Length: 240
Image (cartoon, rainbow, N blue to C red):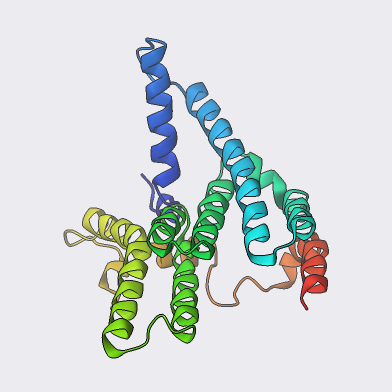
């Protein structure tokens, strides 16, 4: 595979391959063709989109205690200009489903299962590691509410949070380790292998997609900013 392929995490392709292979066994097909993979992708992403909307609604009800406002949030979520990405074969909708599911589980007081759901999101997209912030926030709230009183309780809360964050970070770390084992052996290893913290994802994003801190903000991206403007304005208006 080309170096650029490391920009895409393997969880969704592996899932689609497994589904297409299962379908091939049911239909007694000798090989898995592209059509089966496409159908598996369309079904998976669209089902994930429906699930993510359902999870967002229940998350809204759980946190806002207002079904009308929760439904409005779902409507805005479903009718954004970028909702086309939710129905195509892409990671957006399964990522949203795993993230909303983790947030709902956190709101219901199930941080361990929430960490597993966040790990699923991190196996789909690199920014899934940011969901560790929700786990840290949950731990802080519980400590303020008195669930971490006493040295032993506080230590248990800290260790538990660190372990949950490690679970979330594990998929990304495993993928980077795999890339290092495949690309960084021998004398012809690419330059990123010699970095202090060798990460192929950062290298690929910077080399092929001009990724990096604030590098996206250029005049040529103005059409994309205008496309996102309506949703951004609605979100800003909803902040109280």
